[in-house]
Length: 485
Ligand SMILES: N[C@@H](CCOP(=O)(O)O)C(=O)O
Image 1 (tube, protein in one colour):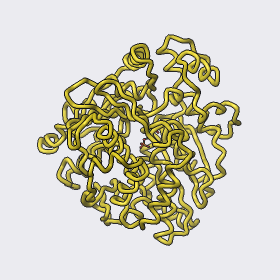
Image 2 (cartoon, rainbow, N blue to C red):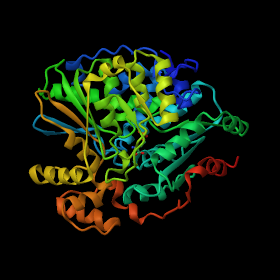
Image 3 (tube, protein in one colour):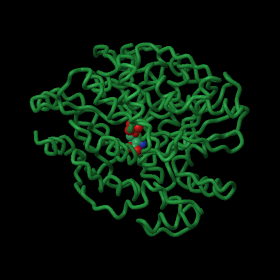
Image 4 (cartoon, rainbow, N blue to C red):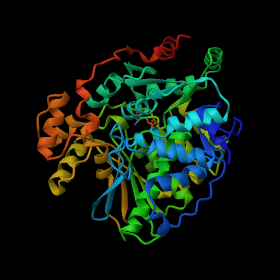
C-alpha cells in the first residue's frame, strides 16, 4: 500500500519513505492510497493486549515493514517505560469512558506515538539504505516537544530540533524541555506562538535549497509532528483497544456505535479516531472539542475555515492553535480524494486566511460536531468533575469533558494529559493558591489525595540546559546554526 500526497503533486511512496519524509514534497500530507483491510473481530480483540492490537494496526498501515521489524518496534515502544502495563487505561463515568493516554514518560498522549516513531524511523532508514543523519524538526505548543525529545534523545544518527512558544507553555512543560539532556537535542523558545513555529517548520521541510545544503552535509529532515504519518497511525490503536475493552466489559455489543469526543488543536488525535472508523470502528458521532481558539468549532458549524482572528494564550496551551494541520487529511477524504479541491483550500488559506467548503464536501462531515470551552468553563469543569466524583482531569481533558453531552450511545473521551502537567490551572480550579515548581506538585498531591507521578517527581532537581530565545523569523537561521550548516 502506497501513500499519496493530499495535494496530489508528489510521487506515491511506501510507508517507510512517507515516515522518513515527514511531509510530501508538494507541501501536502501523506495519506494511505486505500484503506488497509483489518479484520476487526471484536470478541477476539477484547481478549488481546494493547501490544497485540498495535501489531495488527502497524502491520496493516506499514506494510513494507517485515513482521519481525514490527514486532521489534512494538516491544521497544510499549514496554516498561509506561506506568501502566496496558499502556492506556479506561476510567468510567456512566456512559462516558475516559481513555487515559498519559501513562508514558512525559504524561501526555503524544508518548503513544512518540515512543514508537524513533523505532519506525530508524527501521525505515535501514530499509531505504539511508545513511544520512535524520534531523527531526518539531513545532510544539508544549506536549509534542517533550514527548519527541523523550523518544529521540540520544537516538543514534538523529538530531531533534524543537521550537516552542516562550509564553503559554506550562511550568512543567517548560522544565521538561529546558532540562533535556540528550546530546542530540536542540531546544529553542520563540517569541511567537505555535502557529508561527509550525508554519516555519512546514515550509523548511519542503525548502529545496535547504534540503540540498543539508544533503551535502549528509543530513535530511523529517518531522515528529502529526503531519508525519508515523505519528498518526500509532494513535489509531488506542481507539480500537478502548472499544475492545468496552466489548470485554459488556458495555457495548460488538458493532454497536459509540461517540468519540476529542480535545484537539492540530486535529491529529481526532483524525486518528476517524481513521479507526475507516477500518471498521463503529462511530456514530465525533465531537471536536476546542478551547477559545475555536477555529474548528466555527469550521464544523459553518463550513468556513477562517484563521483570521486573535490567537489566544489559554489555560489549555497544547491546544492553542489556529492552523490545524491534519484537517487537510480529513478534507482529502471528505472531498472524495479530490487533491485539486484540497489544493484550492490550502492556497486560499495561505493567501486569504480562509476557505469555504463546497456543499458536497461539507455534507460528508455530518458525523462531526464541534464545541468549544472558555478558560473559565475549563476551570469549572475540572472543579465539578473532581467535586462530584473525585476524578482529577487536566485542562485539555476538561475541554473535551465540557463538550460532552450524554446521548444514547456510549462515549469514549480522549483524556490527553495528566493533571500533573498543569498543576497551576488545576490548583486554581480547586481554589488553591499556586507558587510554581515542585511546591505545586506537592500541593496538588495533598489536595487531591493522589500521588505525584514518578515522571515529574524530580523534574525540578534537574539542571536547565536550554535557554535560547529567538524571534520566529530566525527559525531557519537557528536551525542552520544548530546543525552547523
Ligand atoms: N498539541 C501539540 C501541537 C502539535 O501537535 P502535533 O500533534 O502535530 O504534534 C503540542 O503540544 O505540541
